[in-house]
Image (cartoon, rainbow, N blue to C red; front, side, top):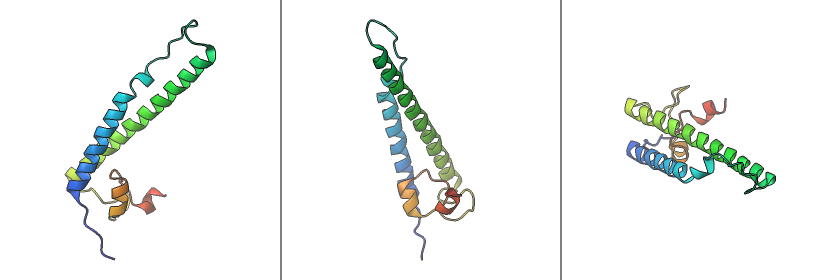
Length: 114
């Protein structure tokens, strides 16, 4: 089987689009991460608990977005260093299909499963 060549230009484009999408999602969710107001008159106890749970979920989603941004920046560094598309553990070529699904992938399927 012949390995397909990695399209670095396309990879850069996908990474940039994903980074912009994450930034936009973060901006849109900014209000959901704000502290919950504990005004007894305005909101009942269950509603406050619900609002606090939603705030925690929004904060968890923001942490996941920040992790993805770090992964994108690491992938951009691998592109700049000429290491993009090679497994960080075994050095084998990461299949193009895997990179199409996750352009931030730094390991081949075998090493990622370990």
